[in-house]
Length: 400
Image (cartoon, rainbow, N blue to C red; front, top):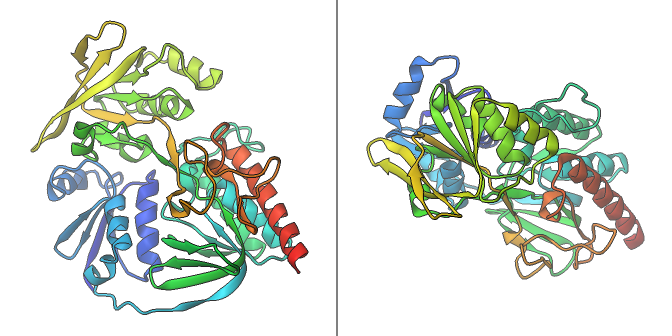
């Protein structure tokens, strides 16, 4: 087996994702923490050809890159060969209920389904815990008056689901057949079947779509402040977006950086009033209203070196003098797996029957951010997960 090295830091959900994948494959790895061993930071950047993001993964003499690069290898079926693992085809046992996704919706559905003796199986997806694992502090989830770290909240949900008898499988389904029951789901050569299916696949961070943004992604451009803010300590950075996530990222970065520009294309935020008040009172944060990102400036050898923005009313552009850009402009629902099978709205969110979690396919239910374009909160996701489990239990009882 080839030597696997992962450079990580504590508040990094993508590091957790990478480690979980290796654990699922029973592959040992060496973890180097750049937060507790800061002397390793510059070594990692040099070894990773200038990339300033964690994790950075090396398998033997091959620099894989970050978590997304690792999972891209897995999805293409190339990772096992790189690890010298011999693939074997296997048939999974049949389940009564499978839940796809492991955020608040998925775990709440699992808790209710397990207590109804449905013996549910959660297939976690590539980002175990979903978007909540990238949130440093959750202050609006009932029962935690002092707030709670997002990753800790998800861990508690998982422990509760497992205690009631939920089976948790780390993996990513890449193909489904919902044309007849039992439903068939595949992860590579592994096949699952189930009588009922709950979809809680959530949503994925959206980027601006600029060519320069793609060029310097992970080399100054990031979608996770808790992961990569460490690299920009005492520097000037920018955050783009106007929702709770963007404002939370700006506040977090203000605790690390000398200056934070908050770029928003409109003249008012969509975020909660509480978050707006915190941003407006923070002396390190400067809000740029009616402004958009025009281009990420950089050099091949150095990565991102600056950011050009445009003032929409005047059309004038200027450089901000920042070394990092954090993108927080919303999410895209993870529904590509069900294209042409399940009904979606114009934005790609799954459509459910009014006041239920039922999709257009009998026995398939949806909950959480994958079907909620309006609220998109942890507590509403959990509530919809409860509804999906109850709907699934009642439907299974009707069938029997």
